[in-house]
Amino acid sequence: MAANTDITPPVRVPTLRRRMRPTRRISLTVGILYVLTFVSIPTLALYKPIKDNVDAFILGSGSTSALQWGVLSEIIVGLAGISTAVVLYPLTKRINQTAALGLVAARLLETCLIFVSVVNLLTMTTLRHDLAGTNRGALTTMGHSLLANYNWTFLLSGSLMPVACDLLLGYLLYKSALVPRIWPIVAFIGAPLLLVSDIAVFFGAYSNVSPIAVLAALPVALFELSLGIWLIIKGFKPTPLTVQYDAISQSPAA
Image (cartoon, rainbow, N blue to C red; front, side, top):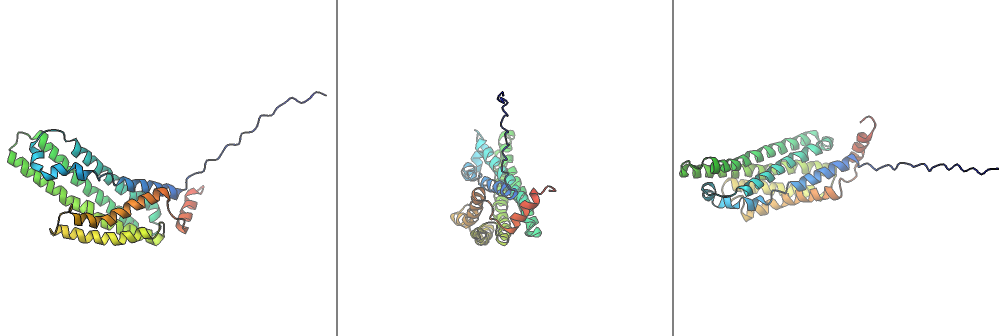
């Protein structure tokens, strides 16, 4: 009897790639966006020559690339800020829809104010290049006005609006227990502290770049940076909310 020489090729079973849970995608995206909001820190150095001597900047010559890089970084911060609230909204609306909508609205207003503030700086570059033949006194007066507009708008966008944003976000995180309670507590401490400092700056007690103002802003900065890093590394804590959201999002009907 002849031996059976037929060889059946092995069947290749496709490997199933594990899909990232919807809540993990949200936490990772939001974490990256929160870390991205800190790219504007170098603007403190980039804008220093302008703030120290606006007359020299308006009437001088040379590159304006430092200012333009600073403006670009602030635009990125504005877009990242509103994106954090939008990406979180499908989850936060299940916690408290009013607070979730309030967070989106606060972030949107913050972004609008950031854009308004940087327009003042970009207008200064126009004064420098396109109006070089204009009266020097008029140019410097306009330059000081634009810088003052930037400083006051920055107080609203960079200091006051984070108070509202972090109080709303802290409330949502505390109520849902999506992250360790220490982070919302830091927000509850830092936001009122920053508000008091903003009021002091508003009434002229000190400037918004003074050491006292910087110290008052540290808890809020710590909250947002730590939250971003935590969400990138750990993600949300398992809760009934995350389990329900993942189940609904991954169901065939979703």
